[in-house]
Length: 75
Image (cartoon, rainbow, N blue to C red; front, side, top):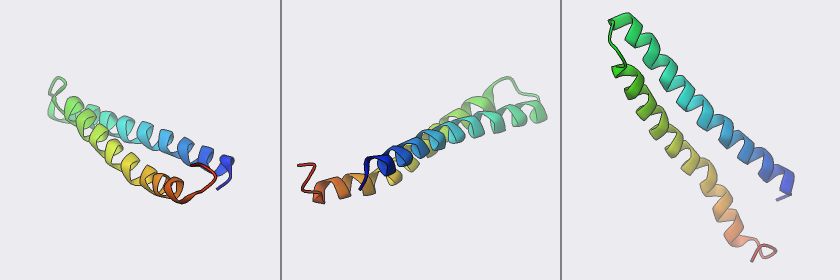
């Protein structure tokens, strides 16, 4: 696989992490305002966004790792 394809995939991973965390925090802020709570839903959104980002990164990077195991140029 060319280096630029790997670079684009890893850039996509970075954007995915940012979107998950920002989405979780943003949803938490909206729910905090709606239910008039302090930071309860913000923290829950941050935790859920981080867990979702971790799982998504695992699923995105796993094919790259499997391909690296089979590529004779890397080993």
